[in-house]
Image 1 (tube, rainbow, N blue to C red):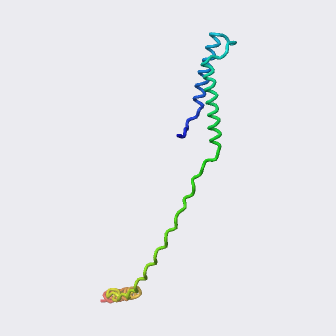
Image 2 (cartoon, one colour):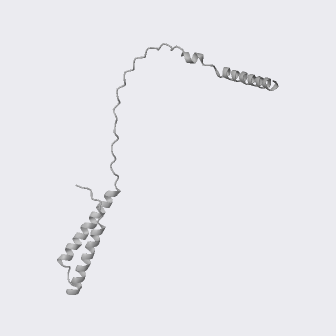
Length: 127
């Protein structure tokens, strides 16, 4: 059975309007002391059924909802450990790195060049 989401209030309202019209037409045509017509009795029964259905739905809505069961995950089998890799031989030092001067050597050479340039400038000024 599909789940209905519409409320019954609109149906009850329409039924009440039809019932009211049926009662007024009976009172105007036959008088207030006459018994209810077939149409009125059918509308009253339908109204009672609609109200019972609404009450049943409201009671059902207050009940706790079923919760989904927790999903149990299966444990995966452990993986086999990998074989250790063979140790690598150390690399030989590159020739470019061996010839590369260190920072301290560069600074010392720069200071020597500045000193030589200053002495050369003094000599050229005197001559």
